[in-house]
Amino acid sequence: MCGIVGYVGLNDSIDVLLGGLSRLEYRGYDSAGVAVIDETGTIRTRKRAGKLAVLAGDLKSGAMETSHTGIGHTRWATHGAPTDGNAHPHLGDDGKLALIHNGIIENFSPLKQELLDEGFAFESETDSEVAAVLLGREYRKTNNLREAFQNVVARLDGAFTLLAVHENEPGLVVGARRNSPLVIGLGDGENFLASDVAAFVEYTQNALAIGQDQIVSITPDKVEVTDFFGAPVEVEPFEIQWDASAADKGGWPSFMAKEISEEPDAVANTLRGRIDADGQVVIPELNGLDELFVDINRVVVIACGTAAYAGQTAKYALEKWAGIPVDVELSHEFRYREPVITPQTLVVSISQSGETMDTLMAVKYASEKGAKTLSICNTQGATIPRESDAVVYTHAGPEVAVASTKAFVAQITALYLFALHLARVRGTQSAEVLAEQSAELLAVPAKIATILEESGVVEELARWMSDSRAVLFLGRHVGFPIALEGALKLKELAYIHAEGFAAGELKHGPIALIEPGQPVFVVVPSPRGSAMLHSKVVSNIQEIRARGAKIIAIAEEGDAAVLPFADTVIRIPLAAPLFEPLLAVIPLQIFAMELAIAKGLDVDQPRNLAKSVTVE
Ligand code: F6R
Image 1 (cartoon, helix red, strand yellow):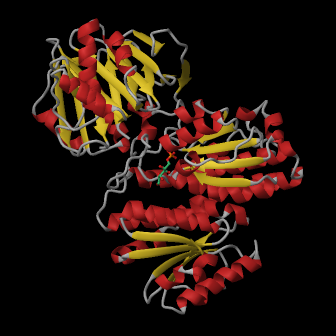
Image 2: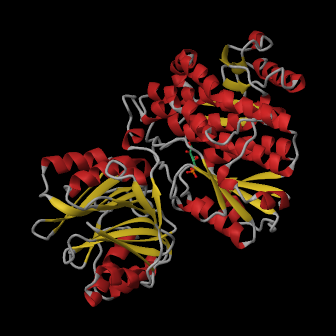
């Protein structure tokens, strides 16, 4: 939530900041602003409610002077409506200092009162302006931006990344972070600070990950990182594995369309280098941890939203292959009760961004309680993997569209790899069985590619159904989390009421929702996998059809049993039952995207959402 970028160097900072913000807009898009120190040494600020394009248009029409130091922000409102006045940057020290913020300052109220009592004035309703005014007050005492930061962070509760510039110190951007993301980009004669490497990957692929509770300052040729008390700390360098083109639309009408088209690669890249010539899964990042994996007696998976559905899907494989009990929980529910955790509990977090605050807090809580923690993450340098004992990266590439698609299939892939790794290490399956499963995994990218090639039926269906008021999704076994994910995609992209149910649960209540014409998607399991499960789902279809439901079945090639009862059948290639979710979800993603397009909606930036949810 909120994207921030800071720049010092030879380029024009407005260009760099706007370019960076455009790549961070997925983090928040209700207002945007920049502050630069111009060549006369004066702070110039421009901020506008609305998407970044509004600010960019404004900057073009009223050109700002060239500058080489600046900060920029794209906002997802928490405190105060998305207005010009509440947009960042906020000013302090009589306008000589500008500050941007991502996170929530929980004690802003008493701090604001303290500053009001001292005669300071405020222009916005935000918690962030309190940090700007406080920093201005501390600057007056110290005449040093870095020292002023040390004084300020000592007073703040909550989560924050702050960046600031001061007129008296042109060529310097100072930042601080606690529980919100911040990475450093190392250029040649220029340096960057940003919420995410996407903001500066166009200029450099060399980055530094900053730890919690650290302060960083950048000048064109120097980077300094200290703890909150000013003591120097080591930072971890890493190379960004993708280039700027990976974060562009590349000719596609939307990031979402591009990212769905990349799903075969997202799976293939996540598998690469992790299955040996004998078909055994060996995850190099987990070398040396065999003893830990043998020692555990329970797995708890924590995640939110789509990532949690990836966890629910993988539970079946983890239990079947590795023979270990698995609980899947929403991070925010896990964190605020008293879950039973022992040193033999492995807590596996799943997060595309690696920054989701609910999941981060749950990981920290699990560590404090003595659990071992493993992160499944798509973003290098992110906080959650850094707070975990081990990480298995998904290699889906940058996901820019707010609703997750390719990251979901990459997450299931990584979790399946982990399940096979665990099964090998714990000796719960023979080498033959494990090799069969990895062969199934290796076949997934080509099968997804086939579904993408034949997506015409789904696109047409979405156009017909664009007036639907409610859509239901049913599934059993691994089809159940896919039904939940199909419903989530439709809600967030097309703003249509949608619900997913376990098909077996229908008769226990939800069947009352069925009335003539009600569209219901049914994820039909393969009859080859389990004839019993298949026939039960076919019976469920008949039950709702008898009450007037319009059935859209997602069924494997050749499954004729569904034909008499379905209004539309969407075919997926044959796969072993546990691998069907990786295929069945694709038409559901395409359906939600196409229906949103048919309604004229922005599929990349749905209303009220932000991609990286860095507040609790
Ligand atoms: C839905 C979606 C969200 C995220 C959730 C977790 O399309 O994208 O539900 O899956 O906010 O985000 P990460 O994976 O970044 O922790």
